[in-house]
Amino acid sequence: MLTLCESLQKSTSNFSSCVETENGAQMRTMCVYPSFEPVFVYIVKLGDGFIVHDAGETVAVIMAHGQSGDTAKKIIKSECKRYGLSFGKRRISLKIEAIDWLETAIVSVANTCAMSARNALKENSKKTEQALAENLYQLLEPSLPKGAITKGFPYKGASGRRYKFDLAVQSRSGITLIETVTAHAISVNSKYVALADVPHDAQVNKIVAHNNDLSAEDILLLQNVATVAGPDGVHKLLTRNVQ
Image (cartoon, rainbow, N blue to C red):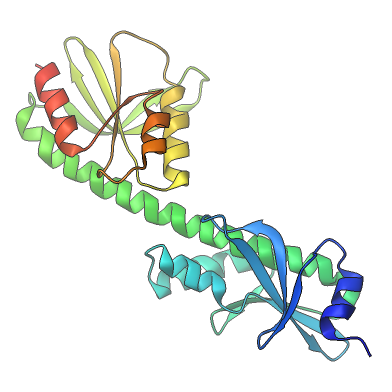
C-alpha cells in the first residue's frame, strides 16, 4: 500500500519533495516568502478529498517581520477572501473533494501565503518609512526657511507616471526630493524606481534617507539614482545647501 507521500507524488509531478510530518504531508512549492524562504504546504487526507494548509507558518513569518498577531490575521483574512481560501486556527487552508484538484490547491495556498507575507512586509515598511519621514520633517523644519519643506510632494516622472515623494525642500536654486527607505527589498526597489524616473535636471536634487540600517549593497544600488544619507547627513546637506 502506498504511503500518503507516494500517492501524492504520483499526482503532483510538479512538486518534487514530500515529507511525512505531524501536520500532514509536507510539500515544498515554487513560491517564496519575502525572505526568499520557500513556502511549504501540508496535505491531509479527508475521506476521498484533501485539506491543503500552511500549518500556521505564514502567521509566524509575518510576526517575525515585526507585525502583531492581529495585524497578521487581518492581512491573511483579506487575501484568503480574495482567493476563496479559509483561515482559522492560524492556518491558511483549502479543502478539495478529489485528487484531480490537488495541484491547483497547492498553488492557491502557496500563492496566498506568499502574497500575505509580502503585503504584511510592505505595510510594515510603509509605516517605518512614514515614521522616518516625520522625524526628518521635525528635524529639518526649524532649520529651513518658512514653508520650504513639504510632505507628500507630487512629482511627474519622465515616464509620465506620477509619484508622491515623502518630502521635498524648495529653494531659489531648485528642489530636493527626499525618499525614506527601510532595509527591505520591497522598500529599496520601489524607491529606486521612483527616483530613477525623475528626469535629469540640474535644479533637481535627490536624496534617499535611511536609519543607518541599509546594507552596503543597497547603498551602492541607491547611490546610482540619489545621494544616500542618514538623518544627520540629510540635515547637514540641506542646511548647507538650502538658503
